[in-house]
Amino acid sequence: MLINAFILALRELRRNVMRSILTMLGIIIGVSAVITLVTLGGGATQQVTQQIASLGSNLLMVSVGKRMGAGQSSGAPMFKIADADALSRELPELSLVAPTAAAPTTAIFGNENWSTNITGSTEAFFPVSNQQIALGRLFTASEARVGATVCVIGQTVATKLFGAQDPVGNRIRLNKLSCVVIGLLKPKGQSTMGSDQDDLIVVPLRTFQRRIAGNQDVSLIKVSVKDGFDTDQAKQRIEQTLRSRRHLASNEENNFNVLDMKEIAAMLSTTTQTLTGLLSAVGAVSLLVGGIGIMNIMLVSVTERTREIGIRLAIGALEREVLLQFLVEAVVLSSLGGIIGIVLALSASVLLASLLQVPFVFQGGIIVIAFLFSASVGVVFGYFPARKAARLDPIEALRHE
Amino acid sequence: MSADLPLLELRNVSKVYGKGDATMHALAGIDLKIYPGEFVAVMGPSGSGKSTCMNILGCLDTPTAGQYLFQGIDVGALNRNQRALLRRHYLGFVFQGFNLLNRTSALENVELPLIYRGTATAERRLLARKALLAVGLADREQHTPGELSGGQQQRVAIARAIVTGPSLLLADEPTGNLDSARSIEIMELLTAFNRDQGITVVMVTHEPDMAAYAKRIVQFKDGLIAHDQPTGG
Image (cartoon, rainbow over the protein chains, first blue to last red):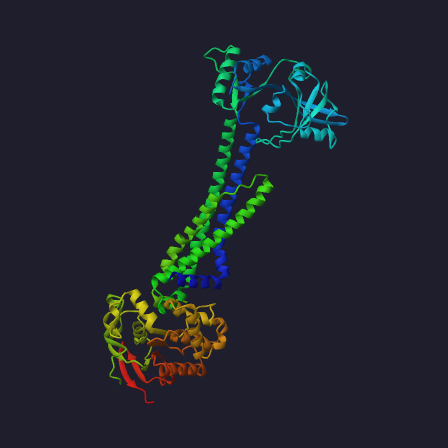
């Protein structure tokens, strides 16, 4: 009986290609929308996670100021190099401590100039920030200590100032400071926040303080925690150390804050996931609309096919055979629509992923869910019109024009 | 007439539509016996109850009172599915409006009752081709109803009705939509199936010329049988 129903249903679909395509259209759009959105969302989430990992997962950022709204952090004194030294001396779980200070500046080489940020830090800056050398060398601990007039530049700065030329060994001017480019960093691309991580110039911290800033301030201490130590505990110990060094009474709030990059990672992936969820909901709605479309067309086609049903019943079709035929038609249409939707979604995802520069991550789960949903839409929305058809009185149905 | 068991028998059958003042007696208690191999023409003005009678004979409708025995089985006691199975295995229908499936080839139309019978594909093809050959449309099997003339469509419908080798062929004004030359072709086909394959034929018609092909004419009037007699020929 099932085979018969398949023969009859497929013959009927083949005879009405246009109607079949229109019925499938809703499901195709719904399925492909939901799969494409979830796949792209998954790719974006993975990209964020990878970018956070490239920052270094056990990285803590210690900055000046209270964790408050904008403008409320004033009054907190800056860190000094001694604070960073104290952290690395007193806290054995920290592997690297890189005090940094930064200022916007214009870099000049020959006729070229480029507005960028100049960062002063120690040799620990590079491993902490996960920066690697591409050409030349990084500055050494002794160069950092004496405040040598050397700098390491990022790819963007190199391109803007030197074009295709090798920057290493050339002298550039940063405000009143003239320094030698000793190294070029490997490109890191855009950060999660969308800023260019290759647009930087790094000089030894002492050089920066003496020649650029003219003070002893350190605005940010980048810290990395040794493997096997808990970053939360390290964070607390840093807070204790700095509170006592900054003479904060026990009732006073911290006038600095320690940011765990893992928290940022978690926050960002939550945001991305929320977005993915939202997009999936939009997709789900279009899937539902597609289902209602199927039900509409099935209902219309039952009315349109009343006489055909009458003929079938008159020549001896059972109620359940007519029901089954209509059901198979609906299921075949929605499954076929589902499969076409999946194929469409995968091609669209690959294309859009490369356009939007997010990785393509195959999402098996949503494909299975979307397919099952479209098939059950066929069963559910095909059932009622089919039952209506099967219960017709053959005499009435035959009289229908 | 044959002394065998009748193929079908109506015993005091009446059919009432509506309730109260709107009651309409389509059949007012009729008795009718039809034996295997007969060719009966049913005549009468519209509203005389002949269509209702045909619906009951075709197991599409059940009597309000009285009994309809098909090969001794009380059809009134059967449920919807059992009546469908009875139609499937013993009856063939030919309608005035042909009632073929649109956009469907002649061959597939003829195959349809065999699909519901569960006949295997190869045998189904063979039987359907044989039936189309018998109605003289062997060269039209891929044509859809839209590509066939009225006479050809009715012949496809006859092929569909006889492909299963039914005991009873019910024809409801089979020539009503056809010109006289086409009508004669159709009547000759029905006569041939009645004569050669022993299929019992019951046919409703308005036209005395067509009724003349039958061996017996049953005349309806006001829900009753007015005359029931063999034809002269």
